[in-house]
Length: 521
Picture 1 (cartoon, rainbow, N blue to C red):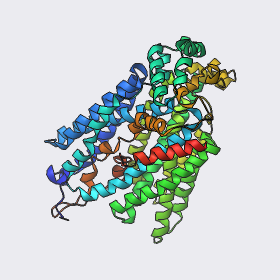
Picture 2: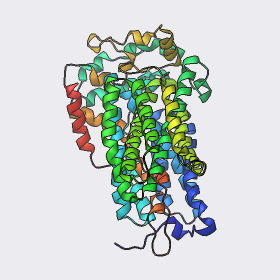
Picture 3: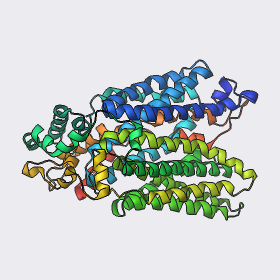
């Protein structure tokens, strides 16, 4: 393989006095992610998950390919900022659609399985980076599939919960009937009527408003408490995650091999998260993952520097627990916020993760004061966040809240009308609010589900989570080992930030696996 590698540094002469501009690309990209989380989160609660998701796909496809054709550094940075916005729009709406369509008892399984695509993408990315040594080619390869995602995104079904709460019940009913036909449950079409929907969500419909803002996250006591705790959890999880990543770059391991290692340790960690989430609940899982990652970070302080194998092992183990914490907090956040403000809330708290990832490199300056001080800060933040997580309410096997009043009533112990009706079965011609998105899928609990059902769920609601690699790969070639003239410095923190997931060719396998797992439940 040739040693001549095309990077941004070599093409735009980002060397000597211009070398800091290389790092600016990451900052600009993350600024776009932050902006997108705020803007698209609010727009989704107002205009719907599907419409914002479709637009985000198109924006990402066009700007991604345009980035590969950028004639200058300035133009490239503009495209990166707008691409970052699109990434937020896709991941936030993908998570919400998944949470709002999947039934209560399988949200844990589905949420954990989809997180594996982050891991698969990370491992496959190492191979792509090694194979494609030209940054323009790499960006085209990872951007072009977005047009395919945009094309079939029109087939997605809008969240029925959101439609009902926004007084678009007829559209919600059509969506549910469509799912019933695909799931081969024709008997549900006659049982599920507008009257049934309205009778079981009358209170939620009456109490819902047309729009909400980020200020509503702080107005009521329980939502305010949830938001403050999640801010700490999101920030500290990302802060510790990238802190560990930067610590690992000191060990002199090949960047390609390091990504394989990172992906490999994620696999058992996420299976662990699945077990914890299923049997111990969300709160205990979140607290445990954060606290254990802190313990490992602190333990690594006392390992002698000449014991590199042990230090690397502990760092990878700590990274695994922070990865499990990410898996948990994505699912947990979607379950804590009510439907009417779910996207606004997720967008707001997820920005804290981006701030945490950008703050992590600054802590390395403390190394000059005391070598162990950065690790103490990373570990201390994780311990503090685990304390905040203790104050979050448990959501395991509980129906999703639809309104802010639902959340406040649960805290006071009164319970909303929707939750009191949770046990009603469609066999009796009734529908509970938590079944709105899945009534046509899980009505007859004693009947095994079909692969066609799983295909619908995966293709409609999981694929939005798989898109991210094409955007996060864009900066990869900047950090490939340089050619004869220029050697590009590599930041593991930046590398990881841009490549946590990827569309992989295991779609059918996951469908089949999910079918078998759900049949056993």
